[in-house]
Length: 376
Image 1 (tube, helix red, strand yellow):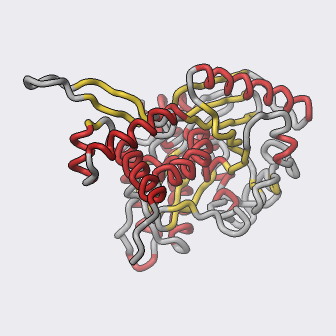
Image 2 (tube, one colour):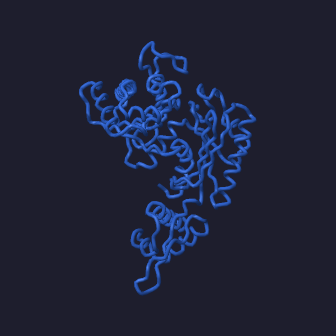
Image 3 (tube, helix red, strand yellow):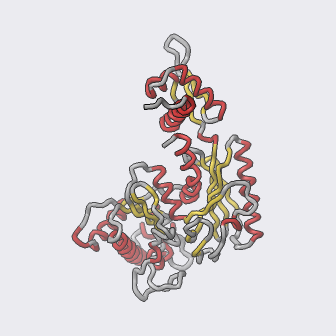
């Protein structure tokens, strides 16, 4: 067997150091020697190279036991950053994350959405300014990921269904015109699922259901987001729940969206927090509406599990108000509807991070960079 070329060995050693520091946090040279089986001269040489590249820096010095204080070395997560962008009807939200997925900066602007060149030029300027501020803090931007309320084409270059924002046909090059960074588009539910996967390494097979004003879903298979050939996997909001039922914004009747949206819980002028506040007081009409809503959500979950019999993650705006008893009641409803009495599945709440979809969108740039950097 041929020995690996010297440069290849050096690169392997450097990646091993990077991977260890990225995954395990600060470490001394002695710890790295013990854990990686590399010599101290090799570790010293590679740490020096990583410091010069900006990937690694000196951390705290450990307390002395009589000799010199041991110096720790740390992976510099903010060496690179990625930006997630969410455009809503009346606002623009930006979120920058580091290489561990931690939020390092946010920006909110009250800006009505318009599917016009002028709007995209305006937000392009806002994003470029945001990225420049990150650069001043030492973070080079890997790219900008747009979190879209619409179906993205298989090649990632356009919106094939954008009824909510009225931007069907929008192309990525129109959206990102004027940006100084690589860009991409991702459906907001897929982006949220990306965050679930990133922060929960035990997640293998599941359907994510996001109970937002416009419900949505995503599919996770074998520990990876599975979008399918047309990027439509997980579009559970448009399954027919009640044939001939309420008219959906998509033009069809009886869609899950029209029965499982938290909007159906509220009376005119009532907020979602207001609804759950009254519900806690035991008001009968609110309890009746909530019970009916849970029935519809349970029916949707049952239908989903008849095709994808994995675990179920419930998240989104409405999920934050569901307590353990509500989740247990929802699971009981699902079991009642499930053929064969199958009970071996988990139904739990998701992470419900602030701006989880924007964080997940930005991870589209972080994940491949970290994977290549650490040879994962």
